[in-house]
Length: 290
Image (cartoon, rainbow, N blue to C red; front, side, top):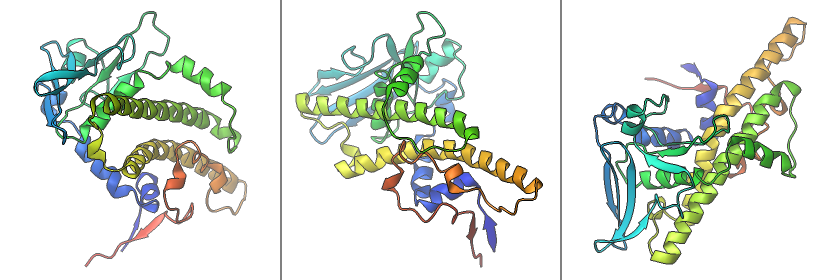
């Protein structure tokens, strides 16, 4: 039978990333116990070199991330040389105890000061770590602590001399969001990779070894970036449909949004890495159920 897909599902299916995205979401989803502060964070992993990383929290929810070898400390990810100034690493318990409201409690995310509150400190919130796949997620968030705050990021974007594919005027605010998200996420991954390289060069352990080869790392980063692009494109796509509906009311025979009216973020999010089946060939998928 014929099934009409939502944009959020159809777009990644067209680029053959749907299964990977669903696996990523499932693997990183926190347990209810952790989200509610009833499960203490404690994670250990031993790398192929014999190095061990231990991530644990205090009763107050402040987190230590210590890399050791043969029982001797090697690297502390909360060290100011690795973690950005005025940042701390915290757990879901910390957020709950300090009444920090967020829909992301229990997940990996970084609170980047937006400049609206004097002296505001940032923090890296650690998700419910359960496997080695969570290590890159943690280091990526640490990477965010080195990214400029939101006002500074917007200034940096304004100074960048780069070509942009222009879209219709009603997509301007979407474009601004895409610029900002792309800048923040790319910069955080760049910082995370730099941190990992520095640890490997100095201490001989690849803390990203679970990610596989260099090509696998690039693929993972591109997949993470594409997840943001899908969210932003879905807004742009809906805006483009609204424009089509207005034109149809005026008698236009246009049936679908034009790709140039919404498909404008590829350069920001490395879309070229994915195979393309054409911008409008994913609206309807046929499924046969026996």
